[in-house]
Image (tube, rainbow, N blue to C red; front, side, top):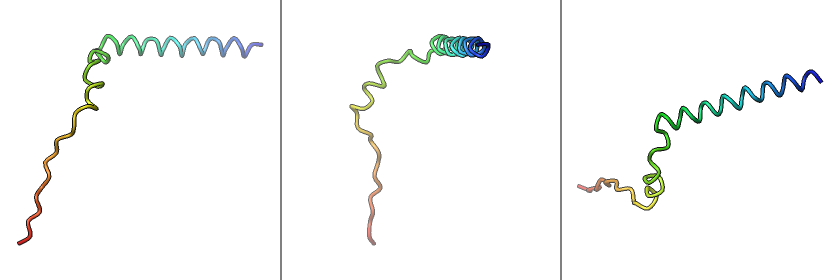
Length: 55
């Protein structure tokens, strides 16, 4: 029974840690750009191909 109290306390500490990391990510601007990732897949990558010339 004592193990359950330890596990509940540990799970609360982990949950608070994840919540703090989420709030830190929101405040630091991790989720500001919501338009570009959705539109990025619609554009083609424009890479320059080198022309191979036989002499």
